[in-house]
Figure 1 (cartoon, rainbow over the protein chains, first blue to last red):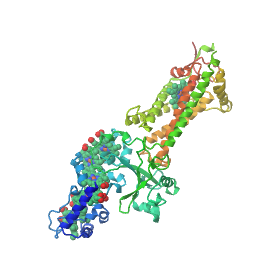
Figure 2: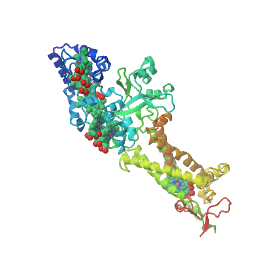
Figure 3: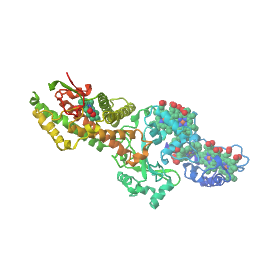
Figure 4: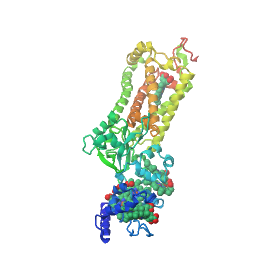
Length: 347
Length: 224
Ligand code: HEM
């Protein structure tokens, strides 16, 4: 993977050299293009590019001309064909993987990704990954489709990125998001607030300080419990989701996703790794690691994240076992005395 | 000739409910165990079919519970009388019954309680059944209904403290019901013969019951 990025970078560097453009050009060049393409008075529709968003993407370092290299001086007048780099030029690994699947007949890279607003998978909340899919596969239709075989399909579709089940990633990890009550009404909905809203709640200390009280960029179970029990944050809840641990674009349905125990199974390895996703100023997310196994805690670690079969807690199992054993005292204890005194009842 | 008297103790609706319920609860317990421990228990096939089985059994038990409730309240109109212990039953009856089960039974004495259709449970049974049928069963069904509708009922679940609280509550309630089973099944073998009460629950007729002359008893009493 990394190797291919280095190749990409080399290629970009090479391009730059060949074009005899100085290294600092990308930013300048973007500023130049955005004079018009970032101004809603000059261009509109798809021609309008949100400069502040573009600047925060990994593509910003390429500048505009790396991908649109045939733009001449006369632009916008006169140039008939404007080049657009194809994604496969640089993303050969993921690109090839995608092009091998049936889905490549249905959607191009551009149908799911806007090249000017790209985000890495770990810079997303989880749920927003599905916005890509919902463009063509509407949510209610997907619930119906999956209902045919998937118990609680509405819950699964609402809580999981499609790509957790529909890509080749063999592992998954848990991402916790801060959800906020939408209004004061009884039983109001909880939704993921943006950076601004959370910033207002947390004040100067920053959003992360809501949970990471000791400021070490690491969330412990204690900090999670503290957050969940804090009456000040009554209107905030942690919503959990499972995202693929590797980026894969093999969009064919994998057979093992039929098997519920791919996810609904416990064991030393399952559900150990989790992250907290905090919204950034630029609309993306930042992930902060959470103590191993924190979501398995009985009650207050992540009160709203429970998966049957997986997040069962050992202490609850022990209490349950004691209760059941209590039910055996009568048959065994009484039964023994009954057996020993059986002669008394032979009238 | 009191030995030959038979009392019609368990009317048909109660018997139907009872066996539906018993079968349902056992199914729920086994499938529930597999849902909680999928990597250890694989008795009932794959995970998906166990989920469906558990949901269906839960549905059957909830429906039959409703049926039982309406039968006793509106048709037989004997719910309060049968299931709610009276003051003197709590004061003296309970103690007397405990003394019987844990002492005089072993000495070979007779059960101080004689079931009649109007008063078929002894004070201990009354208290236990009251707790089971009016607390455990409704709560376990209710939490189950919530868990099959997590998405639509999310707001209520959050108010109750979250999904985990709900799940663990359901689990512990289920453990209590499971604990009730061996005790209950054992106690049903304490009749004159081990199978006496169980036969009654199957046929409706209790054999060898004392002849009852209290005006309260309106059940059918026949002589063989
Ligand atoms: C396979 C297991 C079971 C067997 C063999 C069994 C057997 C019996 C018998 C023989 C009686 C009649 C007792 C009497 O009138 O003296 C009875 C009554 C009763 N059983 Fe069970 N039972 C079983 C499971 C259950 C379960 C799972 C529950 C509830 C969770 C339950 C709740 C009750 C109740 C409430 C009564 C009183 C019935 C009434 O309203 O007249 N039983 N059972």
